[in-house]
Image 1: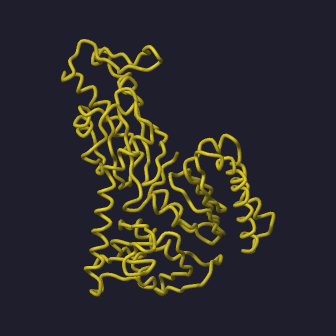
Image 2 (image 1 turned 135 degrees about the vertical axis):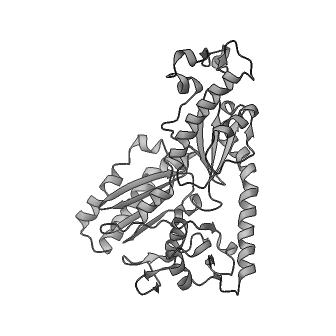
Image 3 (image 1 turned 90 degrees about the vertical axis):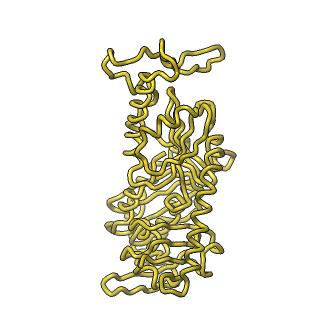
Length: 383
């Protein structure tokens, strides 16, 4: 699974050449419903083609634009899904993400990509990471409140043996990776002739963890999501010594992570991050209420959209599943609302949320009844 980063979001928000197609669908990983994924996918592509033709494209041009998406429809592709699939298509861009979120099925054809369904992965309470770390294995998971998926790791050593294999032989400890025991289980790697608190052993672990940290820093650059460490307790302070990621939680999941499945790690990690998310969201809502009437808050979309564009929104609450179509013209500072989706219109809720994120603000994508001020959008400004 690929990580959706703020950097990639910037690419998606840029003005594209011609019409943009955004497709979202659920891809449940268990049950008979998974067998229906190809059929539902074809139906969504058919809907996208119809919308493209209504927008003015010839039928042949619409089919050619969607061709790369159609090529995804193979058995192997459907075997490597998360909970949801997001696809973005334009004349000069084709990208898809398998993500740990149950999307509502949606096709949007306008002159920009529709990105608001992605907000639960990018907002203040939307996602966190779990680093399951032992001397024998490194796994990284992306979690949300409801789901978890493993991230494909690149440039990250998979064990201490791999991390140190290129070291000068004179500086290495004698080291054996896990060997098979009865029943096929692997026992922990062992350092020969060294005590558990040996300084040289700790030095090797620190160097291993620094390589892990360097790979994660590249993978998680520009991320602000919480990171929960899972591992045996004596490794926690050693990893913290090597860590440079700013959002590593003090508390972690203790025990041998190699023995825990993704769902078990997710359950334990959610217990750690959930109070933090809840407290932050409640504090933001209280702040909105305290500042209401001072001119530092608004629930008027015509006021909020320009403020988000000009980097003046500090905190934004946006209702999930709600669209407000229209246009914003920066030169005139003018917001126009429209009652339905059209090719030249964009979701201004989407626009405000994405620009708030890109400009360093915090966004909470919540159920409509949880937005302060009894409106689908509410903002706290920076001045």
